[in-house]
Structure formats: C-alpha cells, structure tokens
Image 1 (cartoon, rainbow over the protein chains, first blue to last red):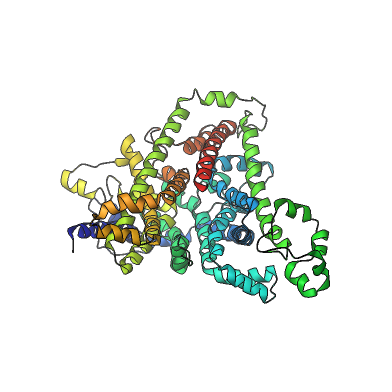
Image 2: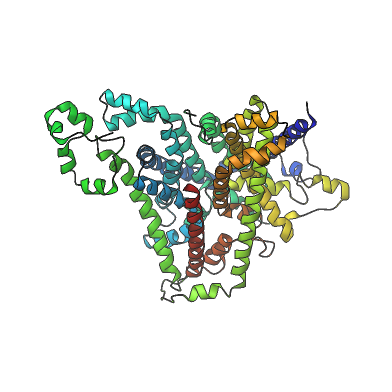
Length: 272
Length: 330
C-alpha cells in the first residue's frame, strides 16, 4: 500500500472519530453526576446515574415543549408534504418557463435571512393576537417545509422513467391516477427522505421559535438552550441529557431513511 | 406529443379520456390561467387541471408567506415602532440613516462578512479534501460507513452541536482542553478571546457542514465517467494532480452551487453563535442576525430599527444569491 493512501486513511479515520467521540462523550456525560463531570481530568469510568435524564424528563416545561415540538413540526411537515410533493411532481414533469420560475421561487425562499422573516412575523402574530401560539409557528414553518419538500422531491420525480408513465397512460390511467399509483410509489423512498429532511429542519429550527414564542408554544430547542441559564452554575449534566434527548429524533430518522437520504444527495440518475 | 384534431375529441369516449376534451378545457374557469402559463403542454395533454391543482396551492401559500412578511418588514422599518409602546409614526428612512452611523451595526456587518468567508471556505476545503480522500483511499464498505457518520453532525440540532463543543472546550472541565491543562497547567478559554471565539464557532459549523459536503463531493466524484481518470492514471499522473486538473474542473459547476448553498446556510448560524458566545466576547462575534435580535428583543425592543436591519440583509442576500444562482443555472 502506498504511503499516501495510508495517510489519507488515517485522516479519514480521524475525521470519523471527530464525529463519534464527541457524541459518545456527550452520551456518557448525560449519565454523570456533577462531581464526576466537573473535574479537571475527564473521567471515562464512573457510576452512571439516571438523575439528569430524570430531571429533564420530569420537568413540566420539557414535557410541554416536547408536545409543542411534536405537534408543530408534524403539522408543518404534513401540510408541507401535501402541498409540496404534488407541486414538485408538476415541476419535474412539465418543463417550461412557469415551472422553472416556480422552482426557483421555492428555492429562493431559502435565501431569506431568518431574522428578516422572524421580526415581521412577530409583529403580524402580535397584531392578530396569535403570538406565542402553535398555529403561528406552524404557519411560519410552512415556508421551510413546503420549499424544502419541493426542492428535494423534484429530482425524485425526475428519476421516474417517463416510459413508465407513458405505459400507465396507455393503460388508460388518468393523470391523477398516474401520479398516485405510478409516479409516487416509484419515487416514494426519495420523497420520504425529502419529507424526513424537512422534519429535521423544523425540529432543529431555533431563531423563529425563539422570536415567535415566549411561554406557551416554546419548542424543545428553546427549552434546551434555556437550561444553560439556570443560575450561575451551568448544570452541564442536565444540559448533556437534554442534548441527547433533543438529538434523538433526527438520528432515528436518519437510521430509518438513511439509504434514501444517501441517494437523494447524489446527483446520479439511473439513466446515466 | 402532438395535439389531436378537435373533431376527434367529441366522437370517441376513449379519445376524450386519453387526450382531454375541449369541453373540459372550455368550461374550467382556470383555462385562461392554464393557457397563459402554458402549462400541461408536454406530458399531460389530458387532465389539464392537474398542473394547476398540484402546483397552485403550494405556490399561493408560499407567495403569501413570503410577500406579507417582506412588505411588513419594509413597512415597520419606516416607522419608529418599539415593543413597549403601541403607537408609532412614520420616520421614513431615519432608521436606515441611523444604521450607517451605528458602529455596532458596521461591526456586525464586518463580523458577518468574516463569518461567511471563514465558514464557507473552511467547509469547502474540508468537504473537497475529505471527499477526495474517501474516493482515493476508502473501499466501498468504508465509504458507506464514513458517509453515514459524516451525515450525522449536520442533522443534529445546531443547539446540540453548539452545546457539545461548548462543553468540550470548557476551560476547566472540557475534554478538548484537557491535554493543555494537564501539560501546562493553564486553563485556555478559546471562547473568551475575540479571534479564537469566531474560529471555534466556525469549527463547529465546519464539523456539521464540511463533513456533510464530503459525502456530496464523494457522490459527485463517483458520478463522473471513469475514462478520463483512468487515462490520466495510465499517463502516470500522480493522485492529487488527477483531481487538480481533471476531476475538480469537471465538477466546477456543482462545486460552485455547493459553495452557494453553504453561503446561504451560513446566514443561518444564529443558533450556534447564540449558544456558544452570545455575540461575545464584547461584540466580536456579533453577526447581523444576532445584533438585530438583541436590538429588537433584549436590549431596547426597537422593532423598527431591527426591521430595517432585516430589510438590508434581505435585499443584500436576495440580490446576491439570485444573480449568482441564475448565472450558474444558465
């Protein structure tokens, strides 16, 4: 083996470790007492305790934030998918000026700085008397979910061979039936990963939630970030536990649709 | 697909089903819209409603959700509204004029620019470097494992990524700073000095995005035709030169769009900065969104002032990204 290859492999292994070790370390820290955690020399061996997790899980603010996050994210994602996936199909199948502009418009929403959305949205929701409500956040998140679903589903539908759809037409399927019974099933894995990705984006979303909620509709990331402000001493054990809990849904989704997501980001199409 | 002459349509039911009837087209109230948009020409000669039914609602919602806040932001930015007082007057461009004599705003502009350049360039270097490394040195099995690992950080909530590393570099208890403590007895606080604070936050950003981009770069390299690379190898061109002169130039366009995607995503690093430094020490890591947030919320509740900043950000980023993106697309 050439020395160059060895060096590259070492670099790759190092990069892999830079991903794995901090995550495992955080997981370990979530089960340490403060006495084990706040020491000059990091401890690898300790008696694990469930206290931090217990503290996080038993807090009413966390329970409510979890509920808020689940309701807000899943509603925004479901509405985003219902509106976005069919739109992506049209953009993928009909190529003309109008659909190109539509695709670019969906993409360009991502160019908007979140602050530029958050400040006017806050004023709007305050004047409508809906500030700090779940509905306000769901509606605001629709920009994210619809545009990302469109953006990532268009390539999925472009990969559905046109011949299959033409065969369906010969079999006298209407255009709607062609979509629901042919194109959608063929593209489903990639469409699902697009939807999963939009869920992850809104689950992780921070700035809009921070500015559009104060108490009732607070989502999990906000509550987690507030835990660092409990007095002068940052409760690192509790914080680590919160980080672990908050990171679980995206990781579970990755495990579920990992394969689809992997192909969604490669530009290769089956015709190549 | 060519249009079928109209007299066939009404005769046969089959034709009706297959190609769409003029009656349908004539009666639907959306017909002018459809013909204006020129939709439904290529594939769907029949079922003309589908493009509008499928694309219409999404577009309407997106346009409403994009336009209303934008108009509102501009409107508020021309007033002197605060969170505490309900009344407000139009002050027209006073906020904008005030911004450009506000040292903190100019500092935020500068920090944002630094942040964009540092985070985008480090992400691209990491992504391309690791992507090529995987392409050159990893077996398919290892590529899969590494790709899976490299996707994880970008999917984590940025709040989590920020906390993970904030504790790792904690001067007293952090695991990254531990070797320095053990060897020198000092307690280095990288988040407390202006320069290292920005780079530490940028490191976390690269940890999330650079590794993810490595996966994309690998997929791009895998999608290239193998012949030019093989030809170069036969000519005994050394490893890195193959990429320097052959593969990377072939991937120029996708790499430019990746850079643009990262530049857009770098605008969304509020959570990282908020958790790790709160704009500190001092105002050395205070980006535009951080400053707009603290003006609009924490310190003064000067909603209009913050809004004028938001409008400036909006104009700059939409102008910049739209022109670049359209140029790449054509």
